[in-house]
Image (cartoon, rainbow, N blue to C red):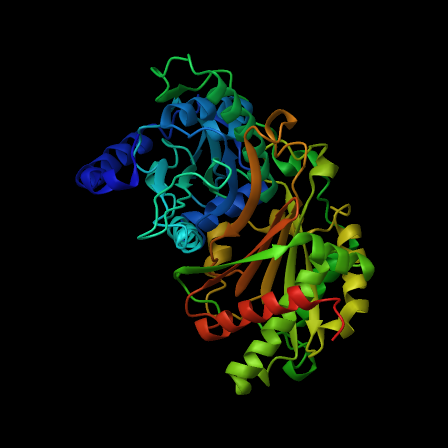
Length: 511
């Protein structure tokens, strides 16, 4: 298995391997025998967006605590079980030969765990540096795309394992915490076409049980596990648009009419949305900051005001943006009358799927927030958003995903946005509270368990200027903030993260 330290040794052969795989992939393109199904609307959107290097990946990570050290053979045996449960992990992506054709998912003959870069295994430098080491690893993964020439021969995912060090320089060295347990951050990084954020949680639910089982089976053979042979009868779940009603109706007609009307209505009569400028033509570096939140305290505060965590975080992020821009760039702040937020939501209930399967099944609600300077006075607006999100999660018709059916040339759709104003200011995506029954193996607290989770995604050329992603395990909430270099500016974003942390900590408290 390739580890980070071995990457330099393998760099010399990587280019030659890529050439061979690219040649093999092109020669196999006419062979339809391994095609599992065509990509659906949302999957096609994600595949084409990534294929033109406008977006890289999603990360859902979890902090694992275990009574015994995790070994590479145990980890790989556990992954065999996880892949068997989630067929999409054994599939590849075949890009279309022309814009008139749809991409498709194909069955991979095998998953080779010794493949360069599929699994990274590292340790944090010290107890004090662990948080920084984790963030740096997330940044590295986000800025590493899935190469087009390997999509139909290798999995569209990778995993990074970061063992937490309890070393204190000049004091003592330790691999265990005060309870004598081992702690690992396991980051599942994946192509957005194969899964959504909740799928990342489903992956970790499966992995936790598989790790506990593999660790208990000490006598199991460690040979023959470097390769997972994919069954020939592999079947994927259907695309979301095959099981969810995404029909277009009166609301869609009104939306299209509104869009066309922009060419007629004078600009001074249109709503002025601040979205951080025009869309560029290439992806820049994704930057990340991570906040640790006391979920119990925040949940108590939002419940007292009868608003949801998602609605509160949305308005807190908007307040942090307005306040930070006022402090860092007053002239730009003067242009900020309204911001537009995207709130992704799961359509799994409409599809009949639970949170234990891996699919790409989401829609989104756009929400405009007018400039304000006092977060506590926006509780009424938060209540309104709380209600709107609840309604939108069950209203799949006339959704933005359904509008993708009107797009013939997806690449042309993306390229045509260059030079136009960005459509969204920021995004807030919340995975919610992870199932408490699924974060302890077998329900035993002293066995393997997940203590914390992190959710993050790479920047998008034509997407929001920044994103806020939330995941909660028990009383621990992690808020990740990601942005693309050169869009809003690091000074503004760093100020925003600090203000957001303050707003979360002080909401609902008497001044």
